[in-house]
Image (tube, rainbow, N blue to C red; front, side, top):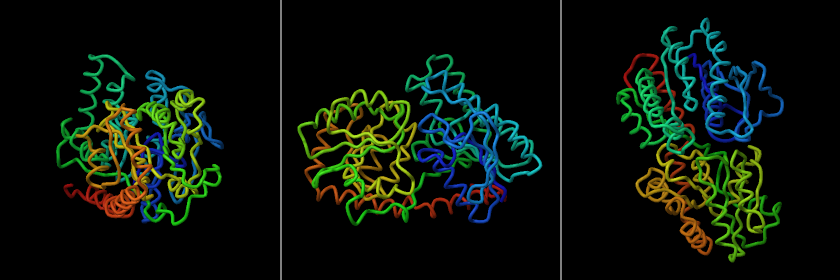
Length: 413
């Protein structure tokens, strides 16, 4: 097949959408398909264009058999509501000529990822006019999240934007998303059931495995034997509710064997560092190199997975896949009726879930796990088994490839 992927995030970004789109494109190219990607220069989660790339120029490159076309964009240093919209609009506009230039190539499928939804109208129009199939993949319901999290305000504006979103979604040949609850939301927005696909995120279970010996990071950080590491790794933005981690650290200051290691970059990092100022039980690190990911995730005795209450079932934390594969216990914040709670406590049985925005409950659960190594080991082993059975990269992407072929051949989903 000729597959055209269209989205603002792509490899070599280490977290979030760029990571998954890059792995998907590489896998499909290695399977013999002709893959092209329209994207931006890497900038996430640091909100700064990566070394060797330009925010102002068009660029074409070959990456693991994938033809990558990068369009300019504006990257704000501190993304807020309006600035984020302008940022997304800059890419949607600058990438249009690149999209139109694929007319002669004639792709079989135009696959576009949300966020940003701003790219979806052009992708849909191009696919329709060129006779290609159209596929919208939703990693985050960015419209709902933007209003629910207060990034954009206005009841009338929300009504009109959601109406446009529903109109647009119903016109794609396929709409996929990453969790069961997010599939339900697509159906509630009026997308026909025959067009909706559950396409979850995955993990390379051969690349991330439980460590047989202590992580090399323990020695590098000078951690004493017996120290229990509570690790947060990933984007430090607005959807995670990371301020709870500062309060948890404060509440466990009298537990000298517990060390919080917070690794990542993003618009919320400076605020989190300010909240943790003076606390000796917190370490901040940047995102670590991909080649050290297994050691990095294996540093954790407990993985921390905070999420704001108002982000429930609008996003499914992509970092959960690596946590499960690492064979370490998980401590998450989620409401009882959310999919994140169900996966952590029931499906994978890999950890504990406490109410969002309740530092005391999270601190109490962390102390309980820190003082019970047998329970931590049991929860971690459960998570690893679940990752092997349900989140294997090859299994999920092979299923996706089959669905793409069926779409091109006109077979119902």
